[in-house]
Amino acid sequence: MNGLVNPAAGHGATGEPTDGRLVLVGNAIVDLVMRVPALPERGGDTVSQDTNLTTGGGFNVLTAARRLGLPTLYVGAHGTGPFGDRVRADLAREGIEMVLDRVAEADTGFCVAFVDDGGERTFATSLGAEARLTEADATAVLAALRPGDMVQISGYGLAYPVNGPILASLVARLPEHTRVSLDPGPLVDQIPQEVLAPVLARCDWVSCNQREGRLLTGLADPYEGAAALAARLGPRTGVLLRADAAGCWLVPPGGEPLHLPGRRVTAVDSNGAGDAHTGAFLAFLGHGLDPIAAAQGANAAAAFAVTRHGPATGPTFDELFDFLDGDPPAALLSAALRR
Image 1 (cartoon, rainbow, N blue to C red):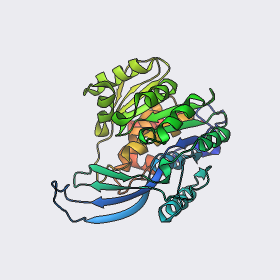
Image 2 (image 1 turned 45 degrees about the vertical axis):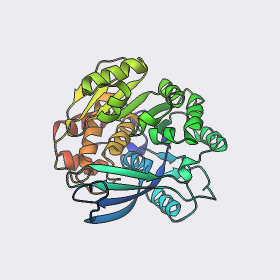
Image 3 (image 1 turned 135 degrees about the vertical axis):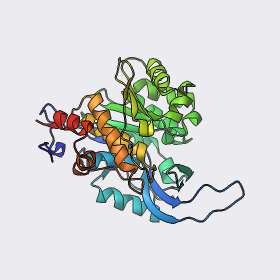
């Protein structure tokens, strides 16, 4: 692996043990992915060229991090039924641990994802057991945490009427030794401020795409949006504003916006690209890389992901370095991870 130490062995860039995990307090659901030439007009219809049933949602973030050697833990709710069974089987296959017991009276929810010929995706989601967190669940999550863990929060959960207040209260009670990351998600403008504000106040990192950045700041320009969001959050919180093929804008805690170019590829499916970026970034941080190196690696992981069909297409280390094939990001990552 290009002379690298495999971070799964438990060491970060400095050679110090890395005991933390990525803990997802989010939603692992089932995706019904339909490839269509284009979205039909209102009242119209279209024929899917290809249809697949996969596990998605927060599963994509956990998978991206797990494939890059970071231990992962799913602490979201999951249901009783065929969708819940599928989610549990896929989590087990990827080596992702679970904490909560299944919800007896509901199945896990699902999302219909339409992917057009340009690789863009459009969603419609049906909520299930994952949207029924309880205070007892929150207590179980707190009990499962250990020093060094990174907690990932999804804006989807914050937007759910039941989950949102529970998650906001949970985040406020997280121990100081945990780092917190938020992906606001496409429903960010539907999250009540009394739910969103305490989560933002506790975040160490916020990672969003350009649309979400615009909804949070009112600014369409990615540089201005990243700077405004960082100013709103304060000097303890870092910002990643993902810009698709253009890479991302990184604002380290207390720093200035920095553009990190992406790798241009022929995209076949953008579904899950943001999740691959987020999972890879957090994995690299967990291995001890600095934010710039971690964001460079995340850009590469997201570029790899869009060249594959399906939502959970983040690369392994071997796949990532084969994909980069000696390009500058590969050298940067190699130097950062080499002992």
